[in-house]
Image (cartoon, rainbow over all chains, first blue to last red; front, side):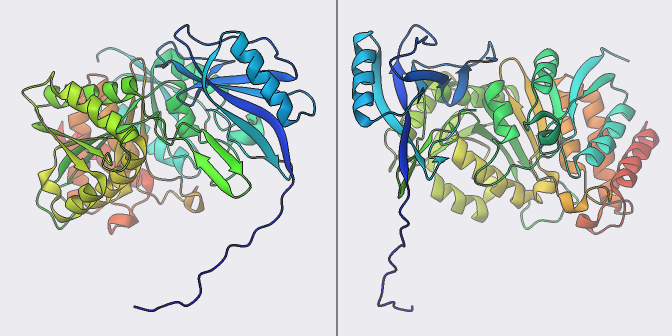
Length: 116
Length: 338
């Protein structure tokens, strides 16, 4: 078996990172959530088990669980502090959430997937 | 002639249209009454509709509840979402049924393989929840749910019971992924209690791969989460003769789509060179789903006979016949057998 004396170090390219939204993981037994705009954040879509359930066509047979991914996109330039305010507002409105994932663009390209 | 069925035909792209025409010719000649409604899907839709899966196609499938689909290509990396995955998601086609059975005339190193794979089709790392969580770390959520796991296990046991199968295996990696695969296994064990007449067992996915290539005859039915299912169903197809003969069905409570699992082979498009058997055997599965057993058996018998004679077979199985010549030979054989 050959031996190697050096372990490769990955190159890293500096990228411009821009905050553009938040994925919220909401737990509810009341079906597909509905949201008004919250500050600069507007709900773009909601998915359940990875399948988009709002807006658009939803099969009446679709299995849904009590955990929804709700994508909120910023309608203007936002900072991390705006996300803190948003999370606080969402919680005060009574939404129970398991996690939040900030959405960033890297060099202008989305660093997050779309829902099916 | 019995009841008329209305079926959505999705020819797909590349060699899909010529394959689907050949398959339609064979199915129509079997005596079954099918009204085919053609709809678009795949890369060729991009220019016309701006999507791989137009709304018009979705609406037609929603109306007919059954479709036969030719091959489509999924772009790798960035770009458009897979039409196949979108179909499974939109119609909640949670059970991907992939039989792997030896075709007698295709010589393989084994005497017997007769495996039915039940791949969970809508969850796991196919939930499309991916993020670049920093500029050097990507993350994909593996989503496994109790109801999603429960229903695929129940589907597998129901199928096993209805078809006289003896044992259902749960394939997992719960020794490492204790939450996700652990939940899948727990649901399987819960369901297994409802079917005391069917034997059940579980096996770790890497061991299952090794056992499949050493002694595939030991397996009967396998139920798997989405990603392991994607990989092992192709492994099983390879054991019995390759993707060219591998049927697939995507089944939900309200809808079923039958499809070849191979690619669209665009470099052969228009040459009428490729073997249409995978779509044809998927069509045979569809006929059985439509309770058209006589037509299904008639086509199957004629196809095996044509393959056995080797006079009118395609290049991949040692012949020179064109796609439509092979199909015509099957039609002629059906007429001769009548």
